[in-house]
Image (cartoon, rainbow, N blue to C red; front, side):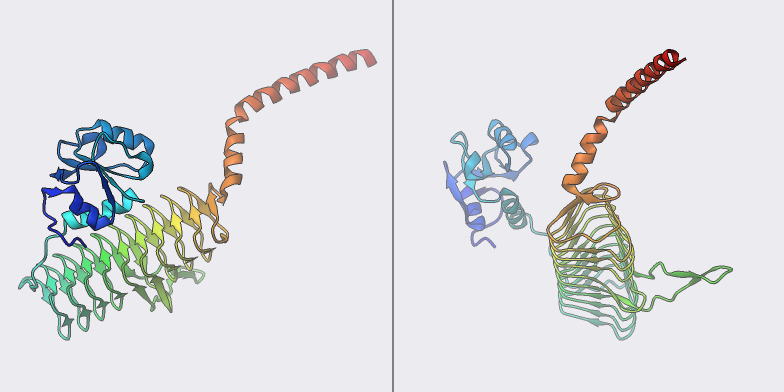
Length: 353
């Protein structure tokens, strides 16, 4: 964190200290805001990590640019770093920290018996915390959140409005659960008995480790017998479905509308683009990348990229897509060849008659 004052306006050199960057040009230039390249105002700090964005940044009214050495220019003061996106995260965190919540349990909240609340816990109006639950130090339960019985939540967590944590769910430290997320719903397990679909009781749980973020309206189903587990550092976008008995590794990133069927196992540092769908019992190796809308039906080796439906290695998918674009032309050529062949056959039949 910054050792110097972090309030705006602030000299550029103070921000350089926060990200251990190098300033070229006027280090005392005052930063009065942070903006996007396209809409930057006078006094703003902007971030550029491509050649195109750097050109726009230096043409804008911005006061200074955070940029790599490769794209730095003398026209404006520059804060040179190796990774401008990382620097943006650090600078924004320092300049715009969240408003602290007072330790307070609203009289309009429902907190059942035998609930253990740590120090500096905040519970908002109309929130519900069930019997036997444990809430760690500094955790904030926003208004209208529902926490069932015997739930364990670590320290410094954020449970946003209308999030639902079913009975027995376990959360680590610094977990964020956004609005509308449902953690620990019964898994989708039924068996046909000849007359009807009979529900298989889902008596397992969900375990979410430290530093996981769950987006809005995400559903993480409880396991049938054991646990559905999301390991530390994984980030999940909005509208994602994680079915029963799935295991997600550390530091994975799942974009919006991803769907995992039951018992999928995901390694560490896996990236899934939007609308990826994965069949049940599939295993995905460490550091694999699944491009958007991939439909995965078989295991994926580590450090590979897959795309398409059904999903296949990315290079193979690209060749197929390139060939598909030529299909209309190929079809026309095929029809012309068929006509020529038919004409030649007619000539041959006449000669042989």
